[in-house]
Amino acid sequence: MNQLTSKNWMFIKQRLTPYLFLLPALVLLGLTVFWPALQAFYLSFTSYEDLAEAPQWIGLANFLQLWKDTVFWKTLENTFLYLVGVVPILVIAPLILAILVNQKLRGMNWFRSAYYTPVVISMVVAGIAWKWLYAENGLLNQFLKTLGIFPEGIPWLTSPAKLFGIVPISLASVMAVTVWKGLGYYMVIYLAGLQSIPADVYEAAAIDGSDGIRKHLDITIPLMKPYLALVAVISAISATKVFEEVYIMTQGGPLSSSKTIVYYLYEQAFNNLEISYACTIGLVLFLIILGLSILRLLINHQGSDNITI
Image (cartoon, rainbow, N blue to C red):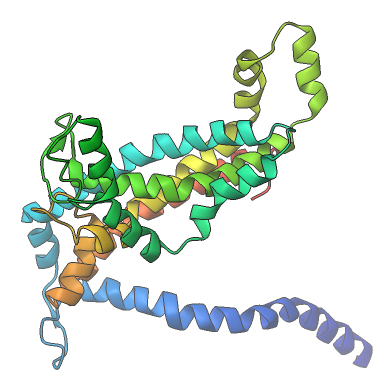
């Protein structure tokens, strides 16, 4: 009996030990992530304008207000434009850079470091620097005036006019900063994938006449599909949650032309103190990101035989 009890105890101990190691992290996540998320979900069905009083249950009133909110739909449109404008560039351009810096040539380590440097720069610092570049008398406009292309310069951050009739100039200017900041990060992901491709595959392709750019079309891109999908989903999630660039450079203006859904959430919560309405916006954002995250998990599962995430 004692022996049986001892075996049972050892079995239970072995089962519980991993969860005891996870307990501190689970408690921390519960207090800082899960519990606030549940509170935000509850508040989205309430009216909580007066922080000194308890929230009042109003059901779906916030969602009905959101449906009629033209500014919300504008921010959703801007977020979609951000997604469509940034993600294709961050999927293709870093792959080209990775192929270039993967060459075994002298000085390539320096180029890798140079391309990766923007990643380690704080977004606050990057945003302020680019805001100076975009200023009316900034370096970009001075350069354009010198060339005589735009004698009056371009209102990079102060014009709601649409570029090619699609994207506001102010939003496109902020997009450029996101692309500049993310190129090096996604380049490293691709670089890891490129270095996992055996050299003899390229050698065999060269014998069959596949060389130069052709070898990348025949070999590199097909073998890099899991990485391409991963970068597409990660960059899409990041573009959906963009905030720092907008906050530092444009404050959502002019005329909400560069206002994204996350910045609108922040504005409602901290500027207008519409806590419940901000939680409703956050719930919509959560559903969007949840969909992208599920897509990423599916892609990771399908590509698990080729890459390790």
